[in-house]
Image 1 (cartoon, helix red, strand yellow):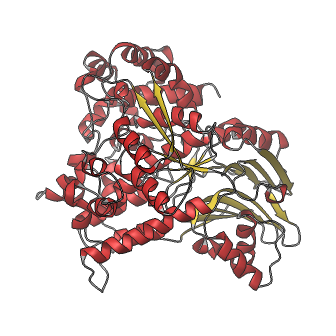
Image 2 (cartoon, rainbow, N blue to C red):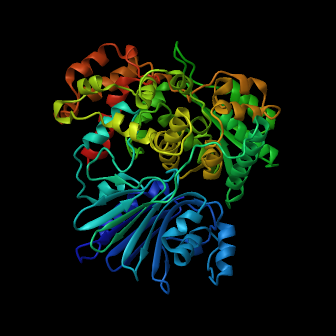
Image 3 (spheres, rainbow, N blue to C red):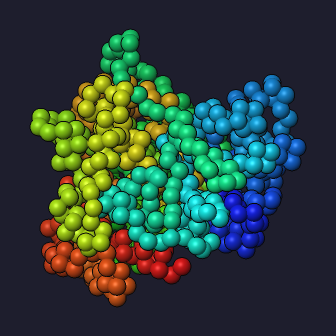
Length: 593
């Protein structure tokens, strides 16, 4: 788990070492253990290391094989690397290290760009192929690891964060109008290749990009997710057994592939509690769990300690509980925004940031429950969408998910940013992709392959890596995801959602945890905006920088400021926080560069 950066010159020049150093320095928090920089002709590569597997210098990066003419920088973890390593040794490859990094390098030497199809895990990497004069970028199937780039006529630069690209300079920071539309209508999800900044793009999940010295790019999507029933019909018990076995394998490989201690982020919900149960079932001793809570608001509690405490006691974990007052949340918000690769409105972003700070003092790797709701149908809006009888697929989705319909979006932003309903067009296109049996199969597949990437998964990566903490997400094991996508929707949506997981949990977890009403990682002060939090957001939106930016229509801003608690999205986010967060992110990440 690391931070990567690099430059490929397309104009015959050599990379400026100072620029590579700036990008690499910006990534220091993602990789606090070591730094490496490498130059070869038109290419410069930078790496910051978080040592998890093969802690020795033999797995240092950039990893270079002069005989093969290859150099690699890699962020992530390859869970099947021992098997791939054995296969490659059988094909005559000799290894100098014991980690997963060299496995990628030699897999590329053996299978070329098709090597990605053999990798099981989370990854973003770049390989400089000197002989071919080509730079190869790749991202894992579900976009768990980030990879951004800036392509001009003179160079290609890439990095784990946009902030590293901004540090290099020369980035067009004009607001991308398509991305802005997604930002305010799709819960701050801006799908690849767009980002809010016109000069910054991102590699889509399950995609490789190959650049030659002329700047020509070849893009290949190497994985897709069918959501169709198998030819052989399975009953509920057979599905339960299959999912249980696949989930158990996903959890076990994420605990065994590490040379350091692994903990669990335990919210008290079904997903993280089930991870603890499966690890205990596997016989993991001295299991460490971590929970965070915040101050209550009259409308909503700020913690779920009664459930996380019950799970920790049930399994005898070494439990760590952190209670964070609102005053600290407000004081630390700017830090959390600095750590966001892109502006993220989810209330739990700052929660994960503050939790990760504490967890990183004890362990370097944690397992987290992200992905279970999307893969197994846990959110309340899925059943409502399925029950809709009127309208197109996008209409059935829109009525229960879009933060703003087109009329409200046009009232939110200034006329310079008006345009087509980009989000409706995008969602309609994704829902119409082939190989899905039912409407809800289409929705869950889109959530799993697109929406989750730029919402909860990105939040967890950014907030944990800000403290040099690796988060592993077993529910997004691609083999488990493939299996779950074929399962009938009824086995997901029954029992109020995640029915099959609840059945697996029976007898393993306390019933009170299984049968509780679904909770959401609570941060009530960012949902019910009042007091100091309202003053904080008003100061941002009334600032000179915000007014001069000319992004928001002032009448809309004033309406939200006048009655902030009345303006929530369909999935219960604060519309005022949406505006304040974006403006704060721009001030802290763009204006000062």
